[in-house]
Amino acid sequence: MAECIQAGNVGTLQAICPDCNRMIYRRVNPQNLAAVRGDLEVTVTLVGPRLEDTVKPNVNCDSARGLRR
Image (cartoon, rainbow, N blue to C red; front, top):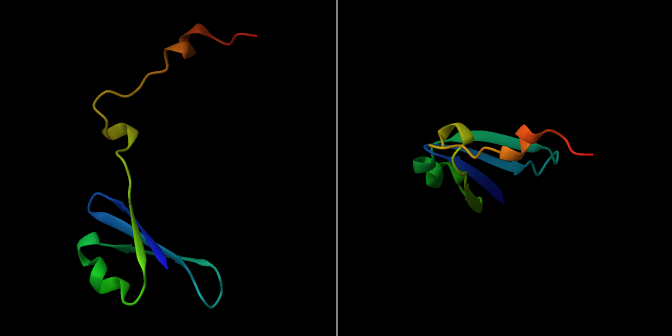
């Protein structure tokens, strides 16, 4: 079993190595995922937009008041 973290047109395929039990990673084009995965069962997770990609970032207005103790 593996997971593909997809952000736009780039994905990161990650899984646990069956021989050494360490994490392995591979960058993939999500359009080619069917050819890359072979016999693996893959779960695809879509990543939301980054803060820098948002039109109007959320501003925490409370931070201007200072710390209350």
